[in-house]
Length: 197
Image (cartoon, rainbow, N blue to C red; front, side, top):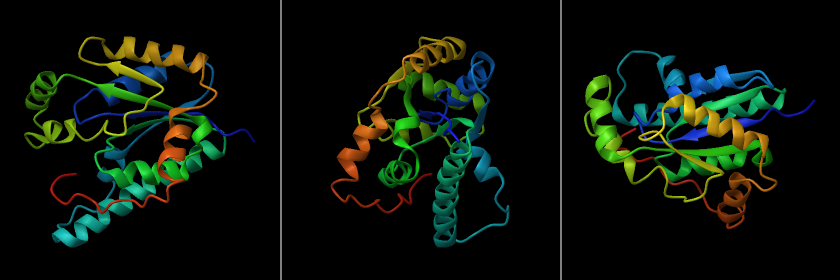
């Protein structure tokens, strides 16, 4: 059985990842793809209030489970579109350790901070300043197979850029390079940042 490809969208909250993922489901016609979002996994969790320590532990387990669910879907041949926010170093390291690096097209979804702030206000369903907090964190690793600017290109055009990148899938992916850089040095996932998700 051939492992499915993974299109991994990484960007701040309100950067347009979900909109791009929905367009990808429409423009990708060479395989069956599933959109898996970390937000959807969080929405499945129990709604009762947890104290901060238990909440931090639950959030970490949720994200680790999400990463392994993506790996399992791809392992049995499904194409997967991942919608994630790699705002803590351990999240990337965990993904590097469980996802097949030769099957991941790593896409940075960028957007100017002013536009992120405008979108966040318009949405009204995110804590004010969340995107600004994540802005300097999500792209710190500095290596992608492709970057999209959702401030200048609409979701459909970003999806088309990704489709073109898939057609010339890199022999050595950004995930492979990052795995060599971080995991070969025995880097350990950092503790979660308790200030913001």
